[in-house]
Every structure is written in structure tokens, then in C-alpha cells.
Length: 468
Image 1 (cartoon, one colour):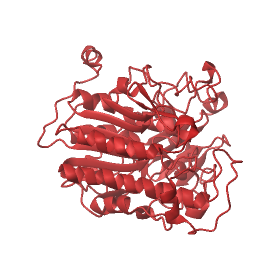
Image 2 (cartoon, helix red, strand yellow):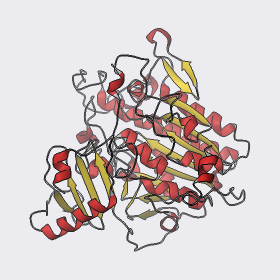
Image 3 (cartoon, helix red, strand yellow):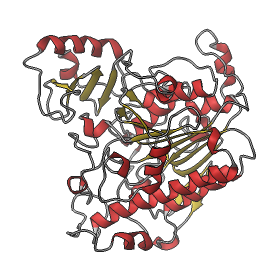
Image 4 (cartoon, one colour):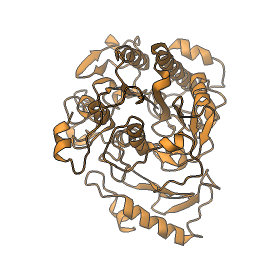
């Protein structure tokens, strides 16, 4: 895929080397959707059962200061796949491309702004290196037949929601497998639970690899709203919590027992993850598979979610769609037998754009250096290291954040005023130091200018641009 472009640009892009079958690992990247930092047991959750994710943590390493690509879905996936943070990435926000028409009501207008062909993705790098590549779950980076079609972005196999809006319903009338539309749930029935179909597809894909190295992104839509889960899972939490029925007034679908539904969705996701990990054992490839579990951003706050009851942010401030820690810091576990120590933990500052160089380094695949850095040395236990460059985020053409060492500078959608926090002493971002330490603010503002480039499609608002 796109080999001719890589050759023509050989001074910038280097070709991929074939994986060494005896050393190069398979890659399994498990991406939850809107799962908060505190929504799983190994990161402090008290009410929701996640035994398989918790077991994964005992078998590997917890990354306690790992950040998503963005506080919302599509740009986070773009960052993951391209290794570029949102100051350089092509997709910097969810973009429905409303100029096409009534995208919310016209089923012919599926999909979000497509990722362009010139972006080199993780899928393409591994595909060119001889891996069998798959993306299962929610895509959100273009629709079938566009540059952003997952099959055009390096994935041999795709199954799931091509469109984020369709993913707001776990009982849709269709999903996509490569270029085919797969009809399900005829006449509005609720027979085929989309997340179940995706888990089964992942197992089927693994069965068909036939010894070929694989790289799979398993991007489950759980626990993104709406609150929907099969009855057998809901029954596990029936009566477990005091409940106030959700009437649907804050978006998405109503539910009689919203707390039970949210917990059940996550536990069912955990069950599916357990089945996929068991499949690796059955195939005899678990010891040669690098597994990552994480989330695309922080927890939602509408549609019946009760993030305060579940303490979904894990004590952090903020949530999805905000650049405070609760919107960006995500629960992350890595298992890599023989390379990552069991029951280990690291507070090294890392982010989604580090995964592309990490996976390429692990698989001996050469690539163009973007914004990320390989985490292999961290995963292998290197301690007391400081990230060599800052983390940068921008969202919704207004919000920005930069993290450099212990300090974080941000401004939110609600205010153009810069806020400064020392995350080492104040991870909950309660003590704004901006007024007291204007020198540090000025220092970090210079970094903001140095790490981002302007985007014609996703420009920062003029008032914010001018204030830099």
C-alpha cells in the first residue's frame, strides 16, 4: 500500500523491513471508548468488575501517566494511527462535515472527515512489513470509498462502525466489513449487539492469521453512549445500586437503570477482552504478542452516565471534551512477555503518538519519525527518565494544553485565560499557579508556539491565536 509514494519520497520516508519471524511480536491494541481513568479495577474502580483487564495488569505494566491523543474520539484515533499529536495531525477534532447536508438525518451521509492519503499510518507500515492488519470497532476517520476508508489506510481487514454517529446505537441496522454493508437487526429489532459481533469478528480474524504476524486494533465502542447492554449482562448488576431512571433529556436513549447499564457494559467488554486474550493462548502466540489496553479519552458526562458515582475520573479533574487531566489521562496496561515485568508500573509521561514508534521499534520496522518516541526502554523497566519533549493537545479550535515535566499549561473552551498546574503535586488541578509563576507561563507559551503548526481546516479561534 502506497509503496510508490514511499519510494519517491525516500529522502523523507524509509521503507519498512520485513519482520523477523522469531523475534518480531504480534501487536494487539485494545481501545475502549470513553472509558475513564478510574473505570477499571486495576486503576481503582470499586463497583465495576473488570477481572480480565485487572489480570492483564498483573501480567504486565500499568502506565499511570499515559495520555490519549485527544479528549474526543476521531482525533484521538488519528493521533494513534499517524504518530502525530493534535498540533500537527490532519484530524484535530470530530468533524461531521455538515457542509454535505443534514448528516444527522440522512443515512446516505455516513462518516466523518476522511484522513487524507498522504498520511502514513500504523496500518500501512505494518502491512508493508508483511503483517496481516485489522481494525475492528469504531473508525470515524472517513467513509467507504474515500481516502479515509480503513482499507485505504493500511488495514487488510475492517469490521465495525465506519461512522461515529451510527455508533451511538448498539443495535444499528448495519455495520461494515471492508467495502460491504452488513445488514443486521431488521425492522428495528434488538438481536445483534454490535459489540458482541465485533468481539466475534476479532476471534475469527485471529483464527485466520494462520501463523502470519498480525497487527490488530480492537476499538470496541464500549462504554460510549447510548446505555445499552443485553439483559444477561444487565442482570449481573440488577439491584446493585440505587437508581434514578434516565429519561433521555441529556442526549442518547433513556434507561431505567443507568448505573447498572454502565457497569454491565464495561464488564461485558472485559469478558470480550478475556475471550480475545484466551484466543492468543489457544493459538500459542500469547508469549509473542505485545498487548496494550487503553481508552481514547476520558469519561462522558451526559446521556445517563454518572461519572461522580463511579468516580470515573479516578480523582482527576475534568472529563471527555476537556483538556484537564480527566479528559486526557487514560488507564493503560501493557503486556509483553519476556520484555515487560509482571506487576510493574511506570509514571513516565507518554501519549498515543508514542505507540507508532513503539510498535515499529518492537517489530524492527523503520519509519518516518513524527512526534512520538519509542517506549520500549520504558516498558523494559528503565526508570528515572524524563520525557525529552513536551506533550501538546488542542481541541475544538479553542482548548489547548501542554505538559512539560511536572508542569501543565492549559486554556479551556470556557475561558481564554491560561491556567498553570504542577501535576506532580496537584494531579487534580486544583491550584492554579498562573498568576504566581508568570515566568513558567511564558516559558511554556514559547513551547506551544514551537510544537504546533496552523491548520486551515481546524484553525484556533483568532482571539486565541492573537494572544500567543
